[in-house]
Length: 280
Image (cartoon, rainbow, N blue to C red; front, side, top):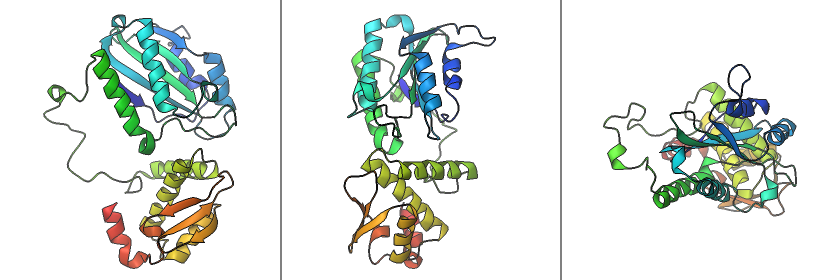
């Protein structure tokens, strides 16, 4: 089994729902079955979500045939995936639609669609952020594959002799010369997180990415410019020590402490910029 998250998620709710359940010509999609959730409710929640990222979709993809799984086993896998993804949330705080596909040679696919809105408060919900969630999702995948005896994508016997998609070059950061549209998309996503943070961790990560971007483009030259940039994000400077800066956010009950070279009192961009970017 592998876990895939799709990048799309900014259109209307009809897009993902129709993809999962409707074939060309408007007929029901063969091999598609709703296992949990209400497609109409999920579509309405996506349409009502005011944020740019309206939904998150993905799939648990198996090489095994769907007939090898009982309904209870599917339910167990889906529930444990939700427990992994929505740590700290109760079931009534999020909506998720599960749709089974068996039209690819009979093998099992468990597709999911999640509106990006926390149902109690109406605040933005980011179901998956790789920087925070990838380790847990990979652990979930490994545990399920081990317990159910499923095909392991990390098995050395399945390793390609030549991988045309990977080389030994350093992996780029989000701002290391990405396509302009991707950079803009990341910037807009970070701005949305900073405006409506769902957690302190997500807020810190978004602030750090924006500050590293400013460093890379040369708009930071010392602590004064760092403080100015933070205030420009709508944050209030509460405390600045030799090694950190604490800021207040209207949505946070406590101040957020930012640590790292950029936030230190003696930060000097001209002498440290190249070293910092190379190290990152």
